[in-house]
Length: 462
Ligand SMILES: *Cc1c(COP(=O)(O)O)cnc(C)c1O
Image (cartoon, rainbow, N blue to C red; front, side, top):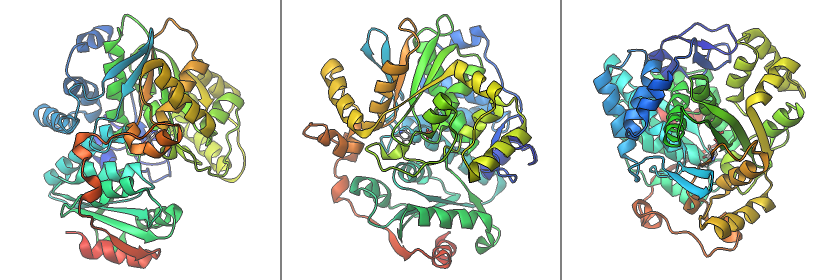
């Protein structure tokens, strides 16, 4: 399996290279050169298998033989053994034909665990094989940092440095990162805001000389392996509800578009999907683009669903590449314009996207209303991200006959403030997180200066 860039100018890479690389050298994102496909029989055969077994079958063609089957199966099994539910990503029925896909049973209670538990293990495997070590650097305003730390804490060949803005992440989110006391985990509180932290990570990727030749690896959602791991639960949920005999639809609370794009890949590989609904909060670039062809940046709004607070949706580029019939030049030109001024998609690609994708945007007041309404109607307590999906599924649904699967991307305990604001007394943390507020923390506080941060990384990596 080879991987090519969405902007058409970077060299094609193998799976191993693409996992270790992150962004392509032409500024694009890597996608498979050709997509494997599942026959109806292959899909039907997956019904009733364990999540790890389905994951092995879905992922294997993308790995292209670069990890032997026994090892791949073991990595997958270990990754999903960290989840506290035997189904890993279980389905729960909301009404006659609406289901929740619970993605929050991993170590940090949000869907990013599904991909990062596997990515850490795959990276460690390749590094060990090569006799190399690598450094991971990332900036986080919350979810991604803790999921990346949990995914890498047992990886002998990786050191992970996560920068968060000092005193600007919630206590639960900070403690999910800073109470992991593993030797290879380094938390850095930057005396600045999230943009300062992100800018320093970007600058470090652009010029890696401070690491003297050690590889710097990205684990943000542009890493192909994250998309690959996320395809699995679409297939697992689809076959559980009757695919390939019957079509299903998905509604996905979205920001960087990595989650729903994985669903689209599963569809392109043969999973019968009728409709994808993209749910956004007030940061609605995806909704504006799909509904009004308004592909433009707007100022960031801080919402009750902070993990969906974005200005630019990085993985949307992968969908554009498909919509523009893999014309890397056209994608590069569109994104170049978008960087500087409001842009719009050409008619044909937009029409193609609208055949499969619908969208709906949900503001904060509605999020609170939906948390109350869903609880009244189903007894389920939704987190604010999932609430955007619940409402979007009802408002943008094409038909009632096709099962609708809304992705529950976080556990309500992780965003208890919003749940309390909606009028509930609070939410208990799951058993494995009890005592979080009493545990010992470890983190460094550094000024928002690139040289200081890079010195810290260079001195502490093992
Ligand atoms: C990251 C995240 C999202 C958005 O997912 P994308 O892949 O960026 O679209 C939604 N909900 C939660 C809870 C998240 O952590």
